[in-house]
Structure formats: C-alpha cells, structure tokens
Length: 148
Length: 162
Image 1 (tube, rainbow over the protein chains, first blue to last red):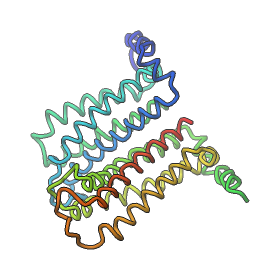
Image 2 (image 1 turned 180 degrees about the horizontal axis):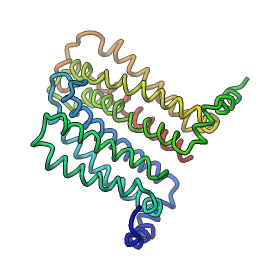
Image 3 (image 1 turned 90 degrees about the horizontal axis):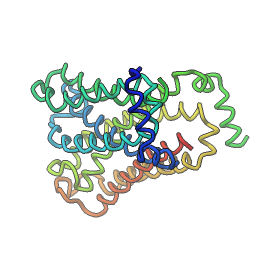
Image 4 (image 1 turned 135 degrees about the horizontal axis):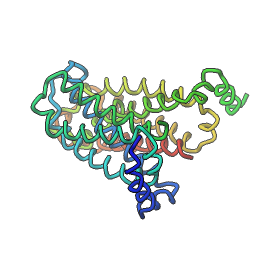
C-alpha cells in the first residue's frame, strides 16, 4: 500500500473538477471504461500478435510490427487519457489498493521497455515474454483495483 | 418453468453461488473475460479494418483472414466459457438487465454478419482480394462487425454498473 505522504495528493484528485464531474454522472464511468477496455484490447492484442510470433504461434511468416506499431501508440494514448479521469473519480479506492501502485510501476516499466529496450532485443524469446507479462500484468492489476 | 425460474435455479447451484460468495473467483473469471477481448476482438477488428481499407492495405484480405481468424476462434471459446460462468453467478441480475439483452442481440448480429460475409460476400476467391479499397458490400460487413463488437463491450460495462 502507498505511503501516507501520497494521501494529500489523492485527496486533492477527488476534489478536482474532473474527479467530481465523473463521479456525479452515472454514465461517465462505464462509458470511459468502455474506451479504456477497447484500447487495452488493441494494445494487449497487438503485443500478443507481435510477440507470440517468436514462439511460432499464430502469426505465419508476416512481420506485423510495422503495421501494428501506430495502433499500439494510439491505444496507449487512449489508455492514459481515459485512465486519468477514472482514477481521479475514485482516488481513495486507488490509494487504499495494492493493485493501483503495482499497475503504475508496471506501466512505467512497460513504456520504457517498449520504447527503449525492446528493439535492441527483438526476436529473442526472453524479450517477447517480458513484453507479454508486463502488459498482461497491467491489465490484471487494473482489474484488481476494486478488489485488492 | 419461466426463464426467470431457470435463472434462479442456475444461480442457486452450489458452484454458481460459490463464485459470488468467494472473495477471488468472480474477479479472476471477470479478468479472464476482459483480457480475452484482446485475443478475440482486436484480431476480429483487424479483419474488419482491413475490409474498411484502414489497416494492412498491402496485404490480401484472404491472408489477413487466414492469419487472424484462428485467434478469433480461440478467443471466442474463452469468452463464451468465462461469460457463461459469470452469467451463472449473476443469472437473475443479467436476465433483468436490458443491457444484457442488447448484448446478446448484438452478439447474434455479429455472428450472422460474419456468416453472411463468409457465405456470400467473401465466398471463394474474389476479384478484389488484393485490392486496398474494397467494394461497398465488403466495407459494409466490416463496419457492421466493428460497430457490433464495440457495442458488445459497452453493454458489458453498462451491465456491470447498472
């Protein structure tokens, strides 16, 4: 769980215009979460398609990284832009959960991995496994926020 | 026995009520259901986007279909199994929810749309397989499929919060 020094920041998030607006509109959260989930499907699906090829699974001979890279970047942007209002609408749930800080750490590592490390190692089974585990872990940790 | 009675019976089965009572079973099955979207819906959407001429324009429609339809089938099986388990745990809530009914209608529509595509629009070899821009019937099928699956995800979220 997060250290208490973060508490004022999370309390402030809940009082912002954005946090209150999402909380006050019944439709806002499910609508934003729909976009968040669709973007996750694009990003995680692309990560699986690109990386499972290394294991000879489900991709044939085509290299698809170039086709999918722009879609991965757009979906990452949509995930971040849709994730912020959801977190700000229920900051105390995030502050009290173990899943939220784990998800944020994994997200930073995954973004650095994607843009800085991965390319130099492309084609290796270890690099492919790390990519899949990072993004799947982010999805699972996200689902876990309301529970643990 | 009405459908509501059947839902009440299903939900009261020991394994079904156990899912709701357990602290971890429901979230684990729900996570599986949500993450399987990436295995099923994105590969399906890639084919739809190819029909619309928005992705992989230099690849033939048949090669994109051959590459991604196996993913869609694997993902679909996981979706149906995990979805049916979640339904059993909350059968009465689902039965009463208008969002769940719309979701079922949209899934049926997406299935019918795919069936029509494979039986008529894309039956055997076509003259436009290699072309980047496709005839209107192919674009219409891709657009309908994409819209239906986005609707399915939206109805699933609405069902969870209603």
